[in-house]
Image (cartoon, rainbow, N blue to C red):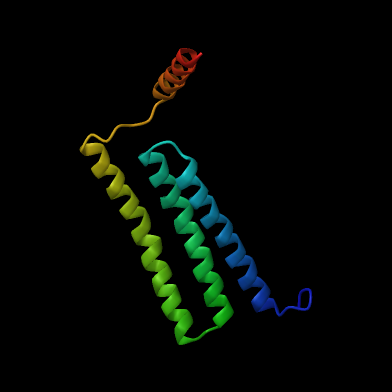
Length: 121
């Protein structure tokens, strides 16, 4: 027992907590990053790891049962499918001419905002 909690439950709690941290990081990345490609990268990598950790935590919590086996199979599908899907989305966007964000573009936006602010005065 660790802090009065059975070891299996403690390990499951730690795995699910770490998974939650990665999933929250993925959500923040989706909101904060500037363009499509960065957002796909953030969601593809951290969401895969976060989901994997949560599923492994659930499997540890359930013990060696049929439900744990099913959870591990779902984990494998997510682990294989999510990065492939992210790559396909990015490649399709690039081939169709979706623009890539650059710092130069951000500087132009800042300059435009400055000019708009000066015109108001």
